[in-house]
Length: 411
Image 1: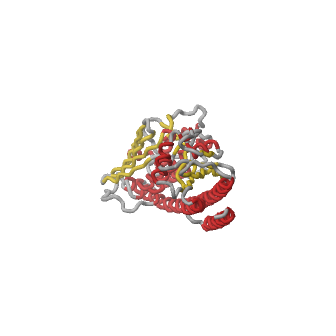
Image 2: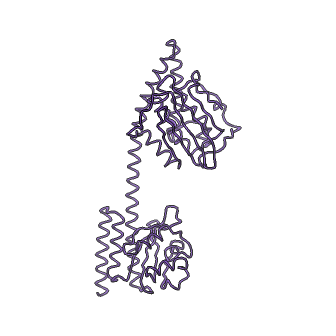
Image 3: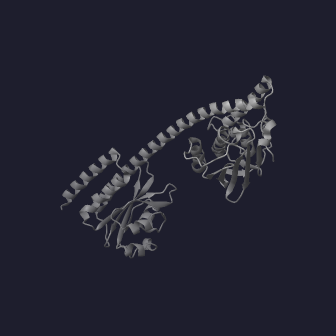
């Protein structure tokens, strides 16, 4: 095959691949076709590989290498980049092409030489793949079964592959970002709908609960106003970016007890604080974690009012926590509510939202135990989300008192 014929075939392959990229074909399929396009004319002597840079910029991850042995691909998946980490690890570290013409002799391959030679790999040229912004995306490598020095023609092919691979990866990332944005938008709409429905349900429950204990219309009005006021305070905690709390505006850590008070006081006024037991060391929640934790506690309290302990006049809730080397371990235990006959077959949106908040936004863990006597929820937050509470000397006095009846939590 002449050089001109080979160039024509490569250009045709490149056009086909670009069309597949535009059509939104799976990234892995596009990259494998790209590698096959450059491997074909070499008659089996060339084995291509594309590795991606990890999100933390420290490792290389498998992208596509259809002709390399699976064992070899698995062994190099996740290697840390560095100054002497084979051809690809070094190229990613320096940002420059690395051409190792004989793996058996080159010091860059000291730690991987045995692995490569065992699979019959003798030469490896690696070139960084960069995005349109110049940032490193990954590497493209040419492996050969015999020692080999790159020719000018080889360098032209490498340039074509790296450019096309960059287009494919960036197109894929843009599409993934678009999908994530759409999913986030849909989740936000579902959450808004869920919140509005919950507020109506919760308000109805507050009216019923207040009517049970009030001895006169005046007393009912006063108590109900206090509960609705407390509900609005709790609602502020779960609205990202919309809170008017002085604590939030000044970026202060917020005591866990304060968050629990805001969340639980709509359900349990001071006169009925025997229904809630709160116990744990003085601990504060970091500003970045307040919204997510308040959201989770709000969901638990709302569900307790609708289905659990707060739906019965004698129902109780115990919230306990402790600090360990791992972080904050908190338990939410309900009792005295309707007996739980079985684990719910269907997971409600509120439960899903709570799990996502803990696991994805707080990097923690949450577990539900549907015991017959009452739900028990255990939450683990990493140490980075909490801190020992130290009251600020200049904290506004308004933070030390309430303007309406509220839950009195025990120390």
